[in-house]
Length: 330
Image (cartoon, rainbow, N blue to C red):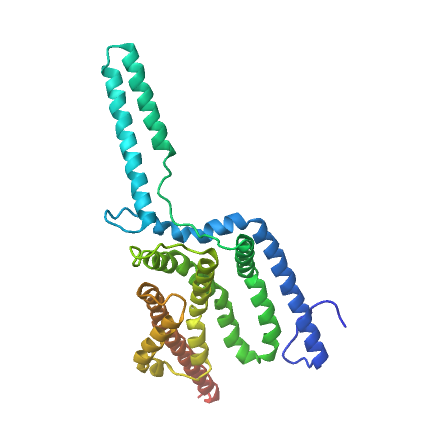
């Protein structure tokens, strides 16, 4: 068996063993790429954890005045302690400047310095951080996040190997349809992940972590948070593949553009059901998922319509050229 990968054409005829050998080589390449990316992500685990924890910035403990949440009451007490210490330091500094006796001035300056020290020692209000409950959870959670990061980094090569294995089965006409659509997949996936990270995830976490917080001592477990965040990012990247599916159906003639336009009501219902099944069944997450999906659906219809018009115009030009070639010259 050959140890190198060679390009395979549609006309080539390979045996089952040769197909399995090619699949084995491509899987080995994918595993090697994933392992290298996993090692890199595990090395930079602190950076990755900081990035994935950043959507929690909106969940800082808020001073609501009459909040019953002990964490928010502690945060309010700390903020009040810091403010009163700063005010006391300023007052003692003014008294020290106004004092005529040097001993009294030194006492006021010492009190001002002590209050400044207290104000600096009070921790600032920060966002909630995930907590770990098991002995090995810090390690397992870090490894899990590093594995997801490695998968994201290795995804372009994995998709390329999948395309390279599948494309020889397509004819030249089918390949002209499949290649542009497959090229869109990684870009749309990245766009979905970026959209979820900056818009969907922070708003969903802010709503869920502050919902009925007067009745709960809310602790955010690392295992559950990372699972929720990764699932939202991945599912949003997958949902952003809607244009690829719609364009494939229209280009292959399975569904027409008018049929898609007539099915808008059913599409909205389907998008709502899909958003309900995805992680985070709260109204904020559902709306954040539904709106971009519907915009992608409408944009896909518009793009499919433009491609259909271009194909019809090209076909008409070809027919006109054929008629001109058949007509004898006078």
